[in-house]
Length: 174
Image (tube, rainbow, N blue to C red):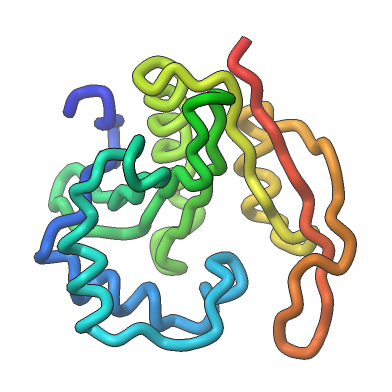
């Protein structure tokens, strides 16, 4: 797993032991906007999800990895490839980090690891990210890695009684 290990964090597959962490993340309503969720998940449903997490990205069309701190293996976030399309060599990318672990460079390192993995190991041509216009932290993070704004989806996200614009960012493997 050397390809998915950085100086401070590593990316790893989900394990059954991640149930409590996943339960905490998926049921934190502050994350629901970015995950398009409106209802909590039961531990039973998450156990079923974990049981199928071993599926290959070519079969599942997605890959969810835990962001862990190297020193302790403590899970601090998740990073995903979604809408994986091997025919067109593209995938969406999303990242979620516990608030207490933000602004420490962990998200940046995790994103760099997954970009490298996507282009070198999965042979993707492009990655894209959907970020609401008001999400300044994510916008700054993705722009740091040269994602370019290519469009705005007007009033795309409805959350807490208001519509938000979502910006589409793209990174080409050149």
